[in-house]
Length: 145
Image (cartoon, rainbow, N blue to C red):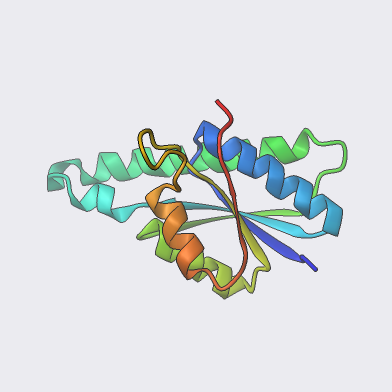
């Protein structure tokens, strides 16, 4: 049923639960996990040009740390799954959905962020866009705290 599962990571704590869920799901179906980090180019372009290089380097490092966390979570499992990593640059939701299509994935797992007030626990903007535009099922996992 599931051969390829994409887990979108930004290195945040809320994504850690999504990573665990993606690894569990993949283990049950003997699927390959693709950990994807998207460098949001908008974060760089909105800053003064003199800062572009430093910010891009920081985002690259943050991405590597996020992917390393997924690799470590997989390696710490009793039965690790096949895992590949990828980095894309652009708008996160668009890049996630594009990656899902490019590798013909069967599902996407990603974290959400809670919002207070009348619409508590709504999806974050990236997660919401992925849910709305993904050709495959999206497993959204919220942080428990």
